[in-house]
Structure formats: structure tokens, C-alpha cells
Image (tube, rainbow, N blue to C red; front, side):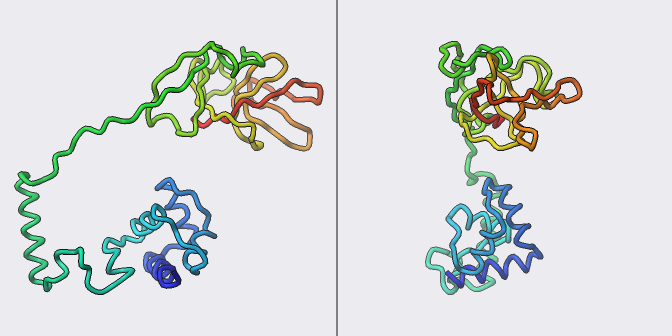
Length: 234
């Protein structure tokens, strides 16, 4: 474990990267970890999982994983028994096979998987407290354009969330009550449903619009009938 960590550390330094740089680069592979995780891997107190390890190899430009981390003869590499001249001839022949086109893998059409999510017909800012218990929705097929975390969709009514969300647009929502200040969510407040930004500060709790020049915050009091339906994720 320490050997793997030391190799990863050396590869990072050879690339001129800081641990923070690696953390940001991993975001591009859908892996969200802090630089402290990178540090733990390098110090040998933790080991990256398979997905994380392969992403690190891509970031560091490691193409021969066996030789880099194990070393010696790779029994699964048909070129490992050849000298440099033999390897060159084998690679030249592979290049000729690719150029011919006759032996290349035929690429098929990948059909994106679909899943079905409810889209409620009653737009936010005109909803009720029974919003998620309503049967008034359409089931529609969605693909990769909708985040995996989405539980349902709602349509925006009005211009209070412009320019990010416009009138009639569907926003996708993860059903949860755990929101932080600054999160965009779908809420019920005193008879209406809203898509707003949740704000918590010294003055209390409120729902704010992105179009703040036109719309003032809606304050939530101790007497308000308030619910969180979920967090907007797309």
C-alpha cells in the first residue's frame, strides 16, 4: 500500500501537480474528493478504489499499469518477450492492420438508457401543500440529460428565477428535506409552491429569487406553513 502511494506521489510531482490540482482533475471524471483524500492515498493510510485509481492513471499519463506498479515480466502482455526491435515490428504491423480498416472494430450505435420520471402538471408558484401526493402528473421518459439523483420534475411559472430558469421550463428535483442556505429548491409556503433559493441568515429564513431586481425575498416566520419538497438538481 505504501509503495502504491509513493508511486502516485512521484507521478503527481513529475506532472508538476499539487494535491489540490489532482482533486479538481478528478472532478472531471465524476469523482468528487478533497485534496485530503489524495494526501491519504499518497501516505498509504488509504487506498483509492478501482474507479479512482484508473482516473489517477489517466491524469498522470500512466499507460502501462503493470510495469509501473508491479514491474518485471507481464505474463498477459504478448510483447513482453520481445526485444525493442521485435516490439517495433509488432507495433508497425498493428499500425498497418489499422490503416487497412479491414480488422478494426465496427462501432455500433449506443442507445442511451431511459428511465421514467413524473412531471407534475401544476406549476410551482401555483401549487398546494399536497403537491407530491397529487396524481396530477405525466410520466415521461428521460435520458442522460437528467441527473440520476432526480426524483421528479416540475414546470416553472413566471420569471422570478430568470435567467437560469424560464417560464414553462421543467426543472428536475431530488426529493429531500436536507437543504443548505444557498440551495435552490422547491418549497411549499402558506398555500403556494415555489422554486426559490433558500436563505438562512441572522435575520431568519427566507426564499429568494434569482431575478432579485424584480422580486423581494419571501420571509418565513414561525407561524408559516412551510415544507421542503426537494432540491433542484437540473
